[in-house]
Image (cartoon, rainbow over all chains, first blue to last red; front, side, top):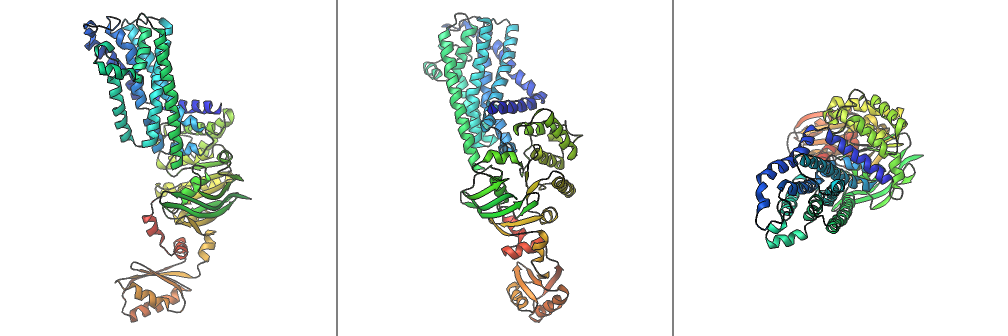
Length: 259
Length: 319
């Protein structure tokens, strides 16, 4: 119970600080909009490619759920930066000299990151609706897309926190985030139907957690939802989230031993 | 009753033996200073006592709780003010204090009242709802101290409370700390590498060098333990060793040591010894640049007990 309460205190602290910086709110909203509005228009004709596999002729309908996931994923790769900032400023040692729940210091970073991904996801969906996107499974579909975003984010936020606690340097963290981010993004069906990409990439995408999130979110937006696939991919993301959270907690203990 | 007991505590970081059997005790209600150069082991001692790090050996108790076996009891009893400010710079002063109180298990009216009281006490009431990023160095440091005090701890650890402050802010911080020690019925353990700070604030102090306590007592006791006065002779050439031998053999000189071009000695009376020292040196053809004399300071105490000069070690020290 204490751990839950302390996690909530720490999440509250971070969200409040974030919302005080108007530039952050703008960045949180503008970036996914650029993808949705500009990229979505730029490649709107790809759904007519021979071979198809898009499940819809509206590229923006195909793209919207994947942008929610992509946004959640990229947000997660950067989430360790907040941990490094707390380390640099000795905020963590100050808390460690109090009875604060240790696990809440790590978990709150992941929860904060996932919450932001969900808020952004809801905004992206709202804008998509305004652009004519229909979520085929209605309310349930919204819930699944946002849940997929939360799991997508926490799976990689855990990893990012763990890496942050191991490297403890901003520059290294940025390099690693880029190193992980772009390859996983391109090795997925985020921007284009899986049938349109080279065979080896199709195989790689099967093992790519980013693609798991995209599949789950896209299934509920497009007609002909395969609920087994949705359930399987959400479950895979959940297992990965638990594993990376455990990794982050382990690195936190390692950090404590270096004080 | 002793608020803090440290008994033969050891701690090693890789190749560095940070604490090498440090031992001292602090009585309830007193302000105790750990004085030493950078790298002497002061911060490590505080980290052990505030449960941030586990000692490799020895025993340490705070408010009757063992730091290794009952860390959470210790954490509730202490306030810890780290060396580099641990405040959340993106939050306001009040938000920082409220969160600190909450993780210490406080809440509601009681916490709000306490936060208000501290903001007033630390002169931060006007800045309470401003983001800390805009605070001056002194204000930030006062907030740090406030964070350590929210839950009314029995023991407060201050790690280098005035490092990085300008002289004016330092002086006002000293006043602040002295008042707190009175008003909050606190035991304070502070570390410092400023002789003056230890002299001014500490009821008692321990001089720490290379992970051990070399001497312990009140500032006056320590200074009085060195009889007489210190005489410092600055030599113009390199015959320091000769000069040391000459001066050490004089009557009334307790102790002589050389550090670069400086020859330090302690004598019963400066007025009587200086002419003798000068004529002895002159008779050997050793040229003197300057002579000063002063009552023993903590610098002299340090030199006496460690055989090394404080400032030189401070510069050589690595945290």
